[in-house]
Length: 468
Ligand SMILES: Cc1cc2nc3c(=O)[nH]c(=O)nc-3n(C[C@H](O)[C@H](O)[C@H](O)COP(=O)(O)O)c2cc1C
Image (cartoon, rainbow, N blue to C red):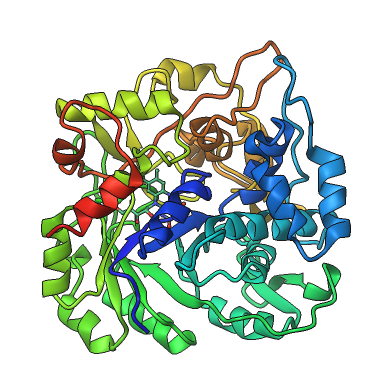
Protein backbone atom coordinates (compact mmCIF):
# COMPACT_ATOMS: atom_id res chain seq x y z
CA UNK A 1 0.00 0.00 0.00
CA UNK A 2 1.19 3.48 -0.89
CA UNK A 3 0.12 5.49 2.13
CA UNK A 4 0.01 9.29 1.81
CA UNK A 5 3.07 11.27 2.91
CA UNK A 6 1.04 13.82 4.81
CA UNK A 7 -1.46 13.10 7.57
CA UNK A 8 -3.67 15.94 8.74
CA UNK A 9 -3.90 15.00 12.42
CA UNK A 10 -7.33 14.41 13.96
CA UNK A 11 -8.30 17.39 16.12
CA UNK A 12 -11.00 17.25 18.75
CA UNK A 13 -13.56 18.27 19.66
CA UNK A 14 -14.92 18.85 16.17
CA UNK A 15 -11.95 20.95 14.94
CA UNK A 16 -11.35 18.43 12.17
CA UNK A 17 -15.06 17.82 11.59
CA UNK A 18 -15.68 16.69 7.98
CA UNK A 19 -14.96 19.80 5.88
CA UNK A 20 -11.19 20.00 6.56
CA UNK A 21 -10.44 16.26 6.17
CA UNK A 22 -12.47 16.16 2.96
CA UNK A 23 -10.31 18.84 1.34
CA UNK A 24 -7.08 17.15 2.49
CA UNK A 25 -8.29 13.78 1.19
CA UNK A 26 -9.30 15.28 -2.14
CA UNK A 27 -5.68 16.44 -2.42
CA UNK A 28 -4.66 12.77 -2.06
CA UNK A 29 -3.26 13.14 1.44
CA UNK A 30 -4.81 11.61 4.58
CA UNK A 31 -7.61 13.74 5.99
CA UNK A 32 -8.61 12.67 9.50
CA UNK A 33 -11.94 13.42 11.16
CA UNK A 34 -12.11 13.63 14.93
CA UNK A 35 -14.45 11.03 16.41
CA UNK A 36 -14.04 12.37 19.96
CA UNK A 37 -17.50 13.45 21.19
CA UNK A 38 -18.73 13.25 17.58
CA UNK A 39 -22.26 12.46 18.75
CA UNK A 40 -22.41 15.61 20.89
CA UNK A 41 -21.15 17.83 18.07
CA UNK A 42 -23.65 16.08 15.79
CA UNK A 43 -26.72 16.67 17.98
CA UNK A 44 -25.76 20.28 18.65
CA UNK A 45 -25.48 21.03 14.93
CA UNK A 46 -28.86 19.34 14.40
CA UNK A 47 -30.33 21.54 17.13
CA UNK A 48 -28.95 24.61 15.32
CA UNK A 49 -31.05 23.57 12.31
CA UNK A 50 -28.28 21.68 10.48
CA UNK A 51 -27.10 24.64 8.33
CA UNK A 52 -26.52 23.45 4.75
CA UNK A 53 -28.46 20.24 5.45
CA UNK A 54 -25.25 18.17 5.45
CA UNK A 55 -25.97 15.96 8.46
CA UNK A 56 -29.48 15.17 7.24
CA UNK A 57 -28.09 14.36 3.78
CA UNK A 58 -25.62 11.93 5.35
CA UNK A 59 -28.34 10.46 7.58
CA UNK A 60 -30.40 9.67 4.46
CA UNK A 61 -27.58 7.27 3.53
CA UNK A 62 -27.41 5.62 6.94
CA UNK A 63 -28.43 1.99 6.42
CA UNK A 64 -30.76 1.90 9.46
CA UNK A 65 -33.41 4.47 8.57
CA UNK A 66 -35.46 3.82 11.72
CA UNK A 67 -32.43 4.97 13.73
CA UNK A 68 -32.00 8.06 11.54
CA UNK A 69 -35.66 9.00 12.02
CA UNK A 70 -35.44 8.65 15.80
CA UNK A 71 -32.37 10.89 15.91
CA UNK A 72 -34.04 13.57 13.80
CA UNK A 73 -37.19 13.40 15.93
CA UNK A 74 -35.16 13.74 19.13
CA UNK A 75 -32.62 16.41 18.25
CA UNK A 76 -33.37 18.29 15.01
CA UNK A 77 -34.80 21.84 15.31
CA UNK A 78 -35.92 23.09 11.93
CA UNK A 79 -35.76 26.74 12.99
CA UNK A 80 -32.54 26.43 14.99
CA UNK A 81 -32.04 26.97 18.70
CA UNK A 82 -33.78 29.93 20.30
CA UNK A 83 -31.26 32.49 21.52
CA UNK A 84 -31.80 31.91 25.24
CA UNK A 85 -32.08 28.11 25.06
CA UNK A 86 -29.55 25.53 26.20
CA UNK A 87 -28.57 22.53 24.06
CA UNK A 88 -30.18 19.21 24.87
CA UNK A 89 -27.46 16.68 25.71
CA UNK A 90 -27.37 12.98 24.93
CA UNK A 91 -27.26 10.77 28.04
CA UNK A 92 -23.88 10.24 29.68
CA UNK A 93 -22.04 7.02 28.91
CA UNK A 94 -21.79 4.28 31.54
CA UNK A 95 -20.58 0.69 31.39
CA UNK A 96 -24.13 -0.54 30.73
CA UNK A 97 -25.25 -0.75 27.10
CA UNK A 98 -27.70 2.04 26.17
CA UNK A 99 -29.46 1.31 22.88
CA UNK A 100 -30.35 4.92 21.97
CA UNK A 101 -26.89 6.23 22.86
CA UNK A 102 -25.20 3.48 20.86
CA UNK A 103 -27.43 4.27 17.86
CA UNK A 104 -26.55 7.94 18.09
CA UNK A 105 -22.80 7.27 18.38
CA UNK A 106 -22.82 4.86 15.44
CA UNK A 107 -24.85 7.24 13.27
CA UNK A 108 -22.78 10.33 14.16
CA UNK A 109 -19.49 8.61 13.32
CA UNK A 110 -21.00 7.15 10.15
CA UNK A 111 -22.16 10.60 8.98
CA UNK A 112 -18.85 12.27 9.82
CA UNK A 113 -16.87 9.79 7.73
CA UNK A 114 -19.53 9.65 5.01
CA UNK A 115 -19.41 13.43 4.54
CA UNK A 116 -15.58 13.52 4.53
CA UNK A 117 -15.62 10.84 1.79
CA UNK A 118 -18.47 12.30 -0.27
CA UNK A 119 -17.80 12.91 -3.95
CA UNK A 120 -14.15 11.83 -4.31
CA UNK A 121 -11.98 8.71 -4.05
CA UNK A 122 -9.36 9.93 -1.56
CA UNK A 123 -8.75 8.16 1.75
CA UNK A 124 -10.19 9.28 5.10
CA UNK A 125 -9.18 8.38 8.64
CA UNK A 126 -10.81 8.77 12.03
CA UNK A 127 -9.02 9.80 15.21
CA UNK A 128 -10.16 8.37 18.52
CA UNK A 129 -8.59 8.45 21.98
CA UNK A 130 -7.82 5.28 23.90
CA UNK A 131 -8.55 7.10 27.14
CA UNK A 132 -12.18 7.79 26.11
CA UNK A 133 -13.18 4.13 26.37
CA UNK A 134 -16.92 3.96 26.89
CA UNK A 135 -18.07 5.10 23.39
CA UNK A 136 -15.13 3.38 21.64
CA UNK A 137 -16.87 0.37 20.08
CA UNK A 138 -19.89 2.20 18.70
CA UNK A 139 -17.64 4.96 17.31
CA UNK A 140 -15.40 2.48 15.49
CA UNK A 141 -18.31 0.50 14.09
CA UNK A 142 -20.09 3.63 12.81
CA UNK A 143 -16.93 4.80 11.07
CA UNK A 144 -16.44 1.35 9.51
CA UNK A 145 -20.03 1.33 8.23
CA UNK A 146 -19.11 4.43 6.23
CA UNK A 147 -15.95 2.76 4.88
CA UNK A 148 -13.34 4.60 6.93
CA UNK A 149 -9.87 3.84 5.54
CA UNK A 150 -7.72 4.45 8.65
CA UNK A 151 -8.18 4.44 12.42
CA UNK A 152 -5.63 6.51 14.34
CA UNK A 153 -5.57 6.32 18.11
CA UNK A 154 -3.39 7.79 20.85
CA UNK A 155 -3.82 9.16 24.40
CA UNK A 156 -3.16 5.74 25.90
CA UNK A 157 -1.93 2.37 24.66
CA UNK A 158 -4.54 0.97 22.25
CA UNK A 159 -3.80 -2.75 22.47
CA UNK A 160 -7.42 -3.87 21.95
CA UNK A 161 -8.28 -2.21 18.64
CA UNK A 162 -6.79 -4.74 16.29
CA UNK A 163 -8.96 -7.50 17.81
CA UNK A 164 -12.04 -5.29 17.63
CA UNK A 165 -11.46 -4.63 13.92
CA UNK A 166 -11.23 -8.40 13.29
CA UNK A 167 -14.68 -8.80 14.85
CA UNK A 168 -16.35 -5.81 13.21
CA UNK A 169 -15.30 -6.80 9.70
CA UNK A 170 -17.74 -9.70 10.09
CA UNK A 171 -20.26 -7.73 12.22
CA UNK A 172 -19.50 -9.89 15.25
CA UNK A 173 -20.14 -8.52 18.76
CA UNK A 174 -17.07 -7.10 20.51
CA UNK A 175 -16.04 -6.25 24.05
CA UNK A 176 -13.65 -3.56 25.23
CA UNK A 177 -11.85 -3.87 28.55
CA UNK A 178 -12.29 -0.69 30.55
CA UNK A 179 -9.97 0.78 33.17
CA UNK A 180 -11.83 1.22 36.47
CA UNK A 181 -10.11 3.43 39.06
CA UNK A 182 -9.63 1.71 42.41
CA UNK A 183 -10.79 -1.69 41.14
CA UNK A 184 -9.28 -4.89 42.44
CA UNK A 185 -6.74 -6.33 39.97
CA UNK A 186 -8.64 -9.60 39.73
CA UNK A 187 -11.84 -7.85 38.57
CA UNK A 188 -12.34 -7.00 34.91
CA UNK A 189 -14.88 -4.58 33.45
CA UNK A 190 -16.03 -4.37 29.85
CA UNK A 191 -18.28 -2.42 27.53
CA UNK A 192 -19.94 -4.43 24.77
CA UNK A 193 -21.40 -3.67 21.39
CA UNK A 194 -23.31 -5.92 19.01
CA UNK A 195 -23.70 -4.61 15.42
CA UNK A 196 -27.01 -6.50 15.17
CA UNK A 197 -28.43 -4.00 17.69
CA UNK A 198 -28.27 -1.39 14.90
CA UNK A 199 -29.15 -3.25 11.70
CA UNK A 200 -29.06 -6.58 9.91
CA UNK A 201 -25.95 -6.42 7.71
CA UNK A 202 -25.64 -8.42 4.52
CA UNK A 203 -22.03 -7.98 3.41
CA UNK A 204 -18.72 -7.82 5.29
CA UNK A 205 -16.97 -4.53 6.04
CA UNK A 206 -13.49 -3.48 4.93
CA UNK A 207 -10.83 -3.56 7.63
CA UNK A 208 -9.34 -0.08 7.98
CA UNK A 209 -5.61 0.40 8.46
CA UNK A 210 -4.81 0.84 12.13
CA UNK A 211 -2.23 3.50 13.14
CA UNK A 212 -1.60 3.86 16.87
CA UNK A 213 -0.16 7.21 17.92
CA UNK A 214 2.84 6.65 20.18
CA UNK A 215 5.74 8.51 21.74
CA UNK A 216 8.49 5.87 21.93
CA UNK A 217 9.94 2.88 20.09
CA UNK A 218 9.34 0.65 23.14
CA UNK A 219 5.61 1.40 22.96
CA UNK A 220 5.73 0.65 19.24
CA UNK A 221 7.17 -2.80 19.95
CA UNK A 222 4.59 -3.50 22.63
CA UNK A 223 1.75 -2.60 20.27
CA UNK A 224 3.17 -4.67 17.44
CA UNK A 225 3.01 -7.69 19.75
CA UNK A 226 -0.67 -6.95 20.50
CA UNK A 227 -2.06 -7.47 16.99
CA UNK A 228 -2.08 -6.13 13.44
CA UNK A 229 -0.54 -2.65 13.26
CA UNK A 230 -0.32 -1.08 9.81
CA UNK A 231 1.52 2.14 10.64
CA UNK A 232 2.63 4.28 13.57
CA UNK A 233 2.41 8.00 14.20
CA UNK A 234 5.27 9.03 16.49
CA UNK A 235 4.19 12.16 18.30
CA UNK A 236 6.67 14.23 20.30
CA UNK A 237 5.98 16.61 23.18
CA UNK A 238 5.84 19.81 21.03
CA UNK A 239 2.57 18.57 19.43
CA UNK A 240 -0.80 20.25 20.03
CA UNK A 241 -3.45 18.52 22.17
CA UNK A 242 -2.57 15.93 24.82
CA UNK A 243 1.11 15.01 25.17
CA UNK A 244 2.65 11.86 26.58
CA UNK A 245 4.13 12.56 30.03
CA UNK A 246 7.94 12.68 30.27
CA UNK A 247 9.65 9.36 31.12
CA UNK A 248 10.63 8.88 34.75
CA UNK A 249 9.71 11.14 37.63
CA UNK A 250 7.82 14.29 36.65
CA UNK A 251 10.02 17.40 36.96
CA UNK A 252 8.72 20.87 36.19
CA UNK A 253 10.27 24.08 34.91
CA UNK A 254 10.08 27.16 37.16
CA UNK A 255 6.81 28.21 35.53
CA UNK A 256 5.33 24.71 35.95
CA UNK A 257 5.76 22.91 32.62
CA UNK A 258 6.94 19.27 32.39
CA UNK A 259 10.61 18.86 31.52
CA UNK A 260 11.33 16.44 28.69
CA UNK A 261 14.82 14.99 28.37
CA UNK A 262 16.93 12.71 26.20
CA UNK A 263 14.91 9.63 27.20
CA UNK A 264 11.86 11.21 25.56
CA UNK A 265 13.57 11.54 22.19
CA UNK A 266 12.40 9.10 19.57
CA UNK A 267 14.98 6.47 18.60
CA UNK A 268 14.73 6.52 14.79
CA UNK A 269 16.96 3.46 14.38
CA UNK A 270 14.65 1.38 16.57
CA UNK A 271 11.62 2.70 14.72
CA UNK A 272 13.16 1.64 11.40
CA UNK A 273 13.89 -1.78 12.86
CA UNK A 274 10.21 -2.37 13.60
CA UNK A 275 9.64 -2.66 9.85
CA UNK A 276 6.33 -0.79 10.26
CA UNK A 277 5.88 2.45 8.30
CA UNK A 278 5.92 5.50 10.56
CA UNK A 279 5.13 9.22 10.43
CA UNK A 280 6.55 11.98 12.66
CA UNK A 281 4.35 14.51 14.47
CA UNK A 282 4.94 17.52 16.69
CA UNK A 283 6.70 20.57 15.19
CA UNK A 284 7.36 18.87 11.82
CA UNK A 285 4.93 21.07 9.88
CA UNK A 286 7.37 22.69 7.45
CA UNK A 287 8.95 21.49 4.19
CA UNK A 288 12.19 21.09 6.19
CA UNK A 289 10.31 18.97 8.76
CA UNK A 290 9.00 16.77 5.96
CA UNK A 291 12.53 16.40 4.51
CA UNK A 292 13.94 15.49 7.92
CA UNK A 293 11.20 12.88 8.42
CA UNK A 294 11.96 11.26 5.07
CA UNK A 295 15.71 11.33 5.77
CA UNK A 296 15.34 9.38 9.03
CA UNK A 297 13.25 6.71 7.34
CA UNK A 298 9.71 7.91 8.11
CA UNK A 299 7.00 7.86 5.41
CA UNK A 300 6.16 11.49 6.10
CA UNK A 301 4.60 13.67 8.79
CA UNK A 302 1.39 14.25 10.70
CA UNK A 303 0.57 17.93 11.21
CA UNK A 304 -2.13 19.52 13.36
CA UNK A 305 -1.73 23.17 14.35
CA UNK A 306 -1.16 24.36 10.77
CA UNK A 307 -4.58 22.92 9.88
CA UNK A 308 -6.27 24.14 13.07
CA UNK A 309 -5.91 27.75 11.90
CA UNK A 310 -6.96 27.27 8.26
CA UNK A 311 -10.36 28.26 6.87
CA UNK A 312 -11.83 24.76 6.88
CA UNK A 313 -11.17 23.98 10.55
CA UNK A 314 -14.18 24.41 12.84
CA UNK A 315 -12.33 26.60 15.37
CA UNK A 316 -14.35 29.82 15.74
CA UNK A 317 -13.20 32.29 13.04
CA UNK A 318 -12.55 34.98 15.67
CA UNK A 319 -10.31 32.63 17.64
CA UNK A 320 -8.38 31.72 14.50
CA UNK A 321 -7.96 35.39 13.59
CA UNK A 322 -6.64 36.37 17.03
CA UNK A 323 -4.29 33.36 17.18
CA UNK A 324 -2.92 34.14 13.69
CA UNK A 325 -2.44 37.81 14.53
CA UNK A 326 -0.62 37.02 17.77
CA UNK A 327 1.48 34.31 16.15
CA UNK A 328 2.45 36.57 13.24
CA UNK A 329 4.21 38.87 15.72
CA UNK A 330 5.59 35.96 17.78
CA UNK A 331 3.15 36.85 20.54
CA UNK A 332 1.27 33.56 20.89
CA UNK A 333 2.27 31.90 24.16
CA UNK A 334 1.92 28.13 24.37
CA UNK A 335 2.09 26.42 27.76
CA UNK A 336 2.28 22.68 28.49
CA UNK A 337 -0.10 22.31 31.41
CA UNK A 338 0.28 19.20 33.59
CA UNK A 339 -3.01 19.88 35.45
CA UNK A 340 -5.51 21.04 32.81
CA UNK A 341 -6.71 17.71 31.45
CA UNK A 342 -8.99 15.50 33.56
CA UNK A 343 -7.24 12.58 31.91
CA UNK A 344 -3.95 13.42 33.63
CA UNK A 345 -1.85 13.81 30.46
CA UNK A 346 0.00 17.11 29.93
CA UNK A 347 -2.14 19.33 27.72
CA UNK A 348 -0.86 22.09 25.47
CA UNK A 349 -2.78 25.36 25.87
CA UNK A 350 -2.64 28.70 24.06
CA UNK A 351 -2.79 31.66 26.42
CA UNK A 352 -5.62 33.78 25.00
CA UNK A 353 -7.80 36.49 26.55
CA UNK A 354 -11.47 35.57 26.98
CA UNK A 355 -10.70 31.85 27.36
CA UNK A 356 -10.32 29.64 30.43
CA UNK A 357 -6.58 30.42 30.53
CA UNK A 358 -7.72 33.66 32.21
CA UNK A 359 -7.56 32.70 35.92
CA UNK A 360 -10.43 35.01 36.89
CA UNK A 361 -12.72 33.49 34.28
CA UNK A 362 -11.63 30.00 35.34
CA UNK A 363 -12.49 30.77 38.98
CA UNK A 364 -15.91 32.18 38.00
CA UNK A 365 -17.04 29.01 36.20
CA UNK A 366 -19.42 26.77 38.15
CA UNK A 367 -18.03 23.23 38.05
CA UNK A 368 -20.58 21.00 36.38
CA UNK A 369 -20.18 17.61 34.68
CA UNK A 370 -23.16 17.38 32.33
CA UNK A 371 -21.47 15.68 29.36
CA UNK A 372 -19.30 13.29 31.33
CA UNK A 373 -17.16 11.99 28.45
CA UNK A 374 -13.94 12.25 30.42
CA UNK A 375 -15.40 10.63 33.52
CA UNK A 376 -13.61 7.46 34.52
CA UNK A 377 -15.49 4.57 36.08
CA UNK A 378 -14.36 4.18 39.72
CA UNK A 379 -15.03 2.06 42.79
CA UNK A 380 -16.52 4.20 45.56
CA UNK A 381 -15.72 3.74 49.26
CA UNK A 382 -18.89 1.64 49.71
CA UNK A 383 -17.70 -0.70 46.95
CA UNK A 384 -20.26 0.42 44.34
CA UNK A 385 -19.38 1.53 40.84
CA UNK A 386 -19.34 5.28 40.19
CA UNK A 387 -18.00 7.72 37.62
CA UNK A 388 -15.81 10.69 38.38
CA UNK A 389 -14.00 13.48 36.57
CA UNK A 390 -11.46 15.78 38.20
CA UNK A 391 -13.11 18.78 36.51
CA UNK A 392 -16.47 18.11 38.20
CA UNK A 393 -17.72 19.68 41.44
CA UNK A 394 -14.92 19.18 43.97
CA UNK A 395 -17.11 17.82 46.79
CA UNK A 396 -18.75 15.25 44.59
CA UNK A 397 -15.36 14.20 43.13
CA UNK A 398 -13.96 13.72 46.64
CA UNK A 399 -17.09 11.83 47.76
CA UNK A 400 -16.35 9.35 44.97
CA UNK A 401 -12.81 8.74 46.22
CA UNK A 402 -10.94 11.43 44.26
CA UNK A 403 -8.37 13.72 45.85
CA UNK A 404 -8.72 17.50 46.03
CA UNK A 405 -5.22 17.85 44.59
CA UNK A 406 -6.34 16.33 41.28
CA UNK A 407 -9.06 18.96 40.86
CA UNK A 408 -6.73 21.97 41.02
CA UNK A 409 -6.64 23.94 37.74
CA UNK A 410 -8.44 21.09 35.99
CA UNK A 411 -10.50 22.20 32.99
CA UNK A 412 -13.85 20.79 31.88
CA UNK A 413 -12.50 19.96 28.43
CA UNK A 414 -15.86 18.54 27.30
CA UNK A 415 -17.59 21.91 27.59
CA UNK A 416 -14.62 24.15 26.79
CA UNK A 417 -13.59 22.37 23.60
CA UNK A 418 -17.18 22.47 22.34
CA UNK A 419 -17.10 26.25 22.91
CA UNK A 420 -14.00 26.39 20.67
CA UNK A 421 -16.08 25.24 17.70
CA UNK A 422 -19.10 27.48 18.24
CA UNK A 423 -21.15 24.94 20.19
CA UNK A 424 -20.89 26.40 23.70
CA UNK A 425 -23.54 25.41 26.22
CA UNK A 426 -25.69 28.23 27.62
CA UNK A 427 -26.00 28.23 31.40
CA UNK A 428 -28.75 29.49 33.68
CA UNK A 429 -28.41 33.27 33.75
CA UNK A 430 -27.50 33.28 30.07
CA UNK A 431 -23.73 33.06 30.07
CA UNK A 432 -21.93 30.73 27.70
CA UNK A 433 -19.25 28.17 28.47
CA UNK A 434 -15.83 29.60 27.53
CA UNK A 435 -13.27 28.25 25.05
CA UNK A 436 -9.87 26.74 25.88
CA UNK A 437 -7.56 26.48 22.91
CA UNK A 438 -4.91 23.84 22.36
CA UNK A 439 -2.05 24.41 19.96
CA UNK A 440 1.45 23.04 19.27
CA UNK A 441 4.73 24.71 20.22
CA UNK A 442 5.81 25.54 16.69
CA UNK A 443 4.08 28.00 14.40
CA UNK A 444 7.02 29.02 12.20
CA UNK A 445 4.96 27.96 9.15
CA UNK A 446 2.73 30.96 9.74
CA UNK A 447 5.53 33.27 8.60
CA UNK A 448 5.11 31.78 5.12
CA UNK A 449 1.39 31.04 4.99
CA UNK A 450 0.12 34.13 6.74
CA UNK A 451 2.91 36.67 7.42
CA UNK A 452 0.35 39.38 8.21
CA UNK A 453 -2.08 37.13 10.10
CA UNK A 454 -4.45 36.79 7.11
CA UNK A 455 -6.52 33.66 6.55
CA UNK A 456 -5.37 30.73 4.40
CA UNK A 457 -6.91 27.50 3.14
CA UNK A 458 -6.22 23.82 3.79
CA UNK A 459 -5.04 23.54 0.18
CA UNK A 460 -2.42 26.23 0.78
CA UNK A 461 -1.26 24.37 3.90
CA UNK A 462 -0.99 21.06 2.00
CA UNK A 463 0.84 22.67 -0.95
CA UNK A 464 3.28 24.33 1.46
CA UNK A 465 4.01 21.11 3.38
CA UNK A 466 4.62 19.19 0.16
CA UNK A 467 6.68 21.94 -1.45
CA UNK A 468 10.13 20.83 -0.22
C1 LIG B 1 -6.46 21.94 18.08
C2 LIG B 1 -5.81 20.60 18.18
C3 LIG B 1 -6.56 19.51 18.62
C4 LIG B 1 -5.99 18.23 18.67
N1 LIG B 1 -6.76 17.17 19.04
C5 LIG B 1 -6.26 15.91 18.98
C6 LIG B 1 -7.09 14.78 19.24
O1 LIG B 1 -8.28 14.91 19.53
N2 LIG B 1 -6.53 13.55 19.15
C7 LIG B 1 -5.20 13.37 18.81
O2 LIG B 1 -4.75 12.22 18.72
N3 LIG B 1 -4.41 14.42 18.55
C8 LIG B 1 -4.90 15.68 18.61
N4 LIG B 1 -4.10 16.75 18.30
C9 LIG B 1 -2.72 16.49 17.81
C10 LIG B 1 -2.67 16.50 16.26
O3 LIG B 1 -3.44 15.48 15.72
C11 LIG B 1 -1.23 16.39 15.74
O4 LIG B 1 -0.67 15.15 16.03
C12 LIG B 1 -0.32 17.45 16.30
O5 LIG B 1 -0.96 18.69 16.28
C13 LIG B 1 0.97 17.52 15.49
O6 LIG B 1 1.82 18.53 15.95
P1 LIG B 1 1.78 20.03 15.35
O7 LIG B 1 0.66 20.69 16.05
O8 LIG B 1 3.11 20.60 15.75
O9 LIG B 1 1.59 19.95 13.89
C14 LIG B 1 -4.63 18.05 18.30
C15 LIG B 1 -3.88 19.16 17.90
C16 LIG B 1 -4.44 20.43 17.84
C17 LIG B 1 -3.61 21.59 17.38
